[in-house]
Length: 499
Image (cartoon, rainbow, N blue to C red; front, side, top):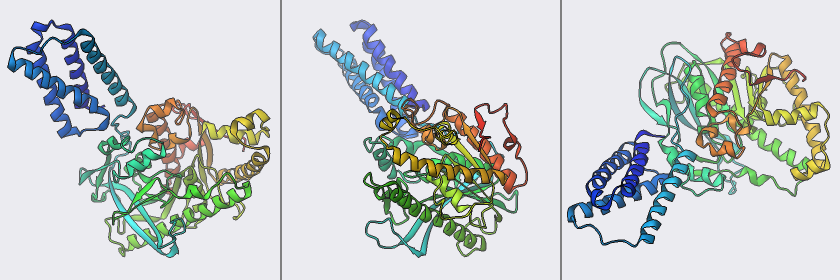
């Protein structure tokens, strides 16, 4: 909660208390003075912090109190006597508005991203890439080439540039609200959330080069929802590029003002059998994997100076990692077949294209939610769903049997990656969206079970610690302590030893 919006809320409570508690003849001056103070706070709030929809009731109360108390103060005669039931109704309405506002302020806070744990300041830059070799197959008009927006976070010179917003473009917030079935204005306050990164800052001269990490959001997600992870890795000396996979994101804005939204969900249908659905997911997965390969090609051009950037010559392309969440985690695994990529991290993502490829002989770190880990454990323990469980899931035994067969192959691939130096862990009391910055947006998500019981900042710090330790071990030849086994600093992290 921001300072002046908190002060505005408290001043409105004070105004109401003065109005109710003071006798009619003694309230004229105190209420007018308090109304003036509240009005000044409102002006400062709107100017410095910016207004937001969730506080409109406060704005209304402040203005009404100022108008009524001002009239009473300067006229000195006051208003005619108001019937008690009308006055009671007005007081009740004010109480309802104050309580409702308090609820909205709690549910939709202008939050602060977790502090960075590394020694570097962070800069950010966004690129627009066009793959002239690939047709765009997810655009319903089927016209044009595959285009991507890629945002990069990197170690920066101290205090250089202007702080970047958490949201790359505020217009995409209405699409985010639509994803949750909410009115378009619901998340507009997120435009006031600041990142720790400086726009277009000079890259730090502390090192001659920095390892590159490519990152992939999940289905219906966005690059900005991995800001805290990207910033933290950059603060430890990595260049991190998060790819907005066009038409698989909630919304992506391009430099010419176009906004694309998610169309890939339309590929799937309840009328499909399991084999068809799996084939569609594999086809989608191949596009996402090809996005990573293409993006890596573009960074080679940036490195050589063929694409202008401050990053020219500053990337260590001999040490490249990849991570992602959900289907983006599967993309990280699948992209790791590229010989230019050394290691990958899969954040709670089931794998795809398992039958199209041979085994991956590279280290991969799998960090799963407790919920997904329980699903995998059922497969490991050969547990069969009961009829009641299938009815509750809205699934069939035939479907789940095929899912189980795929999960068995997935577990085998996980075991192979662990044998190559990777690791498989899960975090207690986490859910799927604890691996994104969605967990910071509203505590209501935790109440609804969208995120787990673990506090968002704690979940974020645990995930960041294990990601950093793994990348340090393979891309910097240091660290690796957390990969050896349970650590008393992170009791919620459980190692999967039965693969």
